[in-house]
Image (cartoon, rainbow, N blue to C red):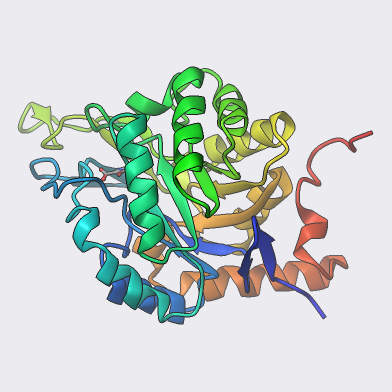
Length: 305
Ligand code: RRO
């Protein structure tokens, strides 16, 4: 019998797939739909202290091999988000609350408020590539990453995940800083900073000009990031970026991820992507003599002494 269940920082997932922050996760109803479709866990859209409209449109450019987005952290604010969590929890899978803030105090306050909503863990968005004062602007220096994680940990008693940016020369240094700050797990990666220009309009297409690239094109960057982080820290790593089939997920797992998140893959394949990825992983396990998913985590690395 193949076993797809995983445990991450005490959270029990029936399979290693999670809904990534940013797709189909603004409302409780859509997260419930994703849970019912087979995801092992769901992550909310990133929520801040105050309501935000986000960046001016156009906010999304569809590319051949992915998406470029500059949504700009649109959200209703933490104070009215609790109702969405309640509905999402009806799906019976762990719900992880993603938060963003401009400094340690704001992030600590959000972590505490997010815990009160009933989420099972908090994910710190230290990596949105196009939000002034937030995301990667907070998450690009190891000192600040360590300090933010420390404050978030002090403010809540549930696991804290740090979602890191690939727009850096050393993502493993950021991961080590998060680990020093007490983060319970690393999520890698967020989108890659990019731009698309319309030759007809002679200007950048996105309202914000700059956005984040996601989808199949970024998978090699995500896999390499997870591979490096796995060798640099002891805490679990969750892989995200360009996953839409079992083989994509297996790349991340063999690089060292204990679970994977799917975002743009939901946009391209629909909510059936979770079941499809799980079926394909199980088929691979059957064909290759694996009975437990944990046996494959990190096998692409040379054996550790
Ligand atoms: O809302 C966004 O524009 C956004 C976020 Br919070 C993020 O973390 N990553 C991204 O590509 N877009």
